[in-house]
Image (cartoon, rainbow, N blue to C red; front, side, top):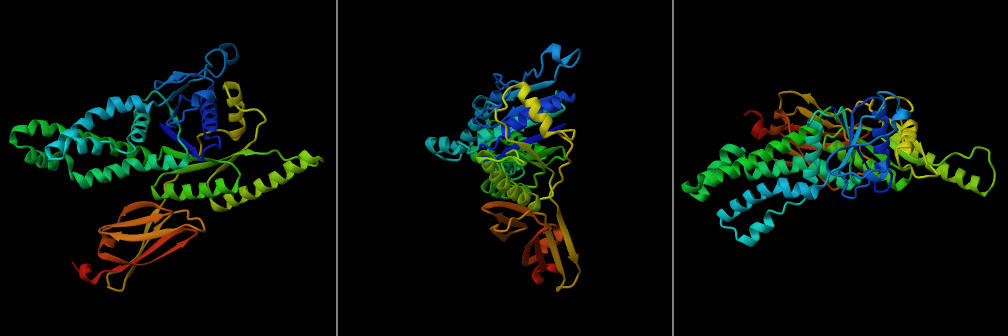
Length: 412
């Protein structure tokens, strides 16, 4: 099972390219599901088909053109988070409300505290996981929202799992004892149901996190050859690496045709614009070793099966649309020794851009890394938990943090 998530700055054409990739993959014989988690759904517009939350078949060619047995195996859907919210969140929200009321929190406060920010995004991701786990498709291609929303979406499972663990450590055992103690022995069964619901939530969050970190899951970033968009893409690469999310390639969309030796005002404009775009493209290539595809700007908007297949042929002319192997950002431990003056290093393969704002903090057994306002807690290897941070250097190969033994803990 391959899961490929398309995202990019709003307006760069990620939905169209996700649809074109899905169409090309289906034409090659893959059983493909294209699904949109973007709240502003436009996947159905790209396919020229009315989509709902339930996958429906999308015909790429008529039977006569496709020939016997050549009907494309493509389905598409647009996740309807409002319906999921009503179905999936209602039970857990009621359990949480009961727990808060039993702990002495007023009805009004309990109502407000159970409105979880980002829950719709979380349910959208859970629906992608459900569809992928059904086994009906070889590949699931996800049209995500713009980069800022997608980064929040991809960070949610880990963030919420962390909050849940801090609030209710070792869920099924400790929560039951805590809640039963608050409620009184006569309400143990009712509170056990709350603990069960929290345990199921923890399991789902872990399953989502496992899906995102799987070697079979990758992100494909779409951008246009503009300096502002390229800068956001570099920041996005750093943010995804910080979350240990694999990126398997970039797609540069809307590259204007080169006018060659043509003359005239229109040719001069195209030549100037293409030169600017080539300069941006060179900067993107210099900043990353990821595979990069380019797509020419079209005079007509690529809408409908025929146009998407044509675009898919250009986008994936080299062959398999899914051939890139996404690699996980590395974290390497170096150095060593037993003496108090030994030095250890922890290298984090973060693709830092030149003006990246990096901040480090030690919080217990974790290292808090903040890049451009996005924070991640990284659990330190056992040996580094008895060390203190003595320095950090950001370079082309990522971030290298230096540690030395803490005399108060080293010999314990």
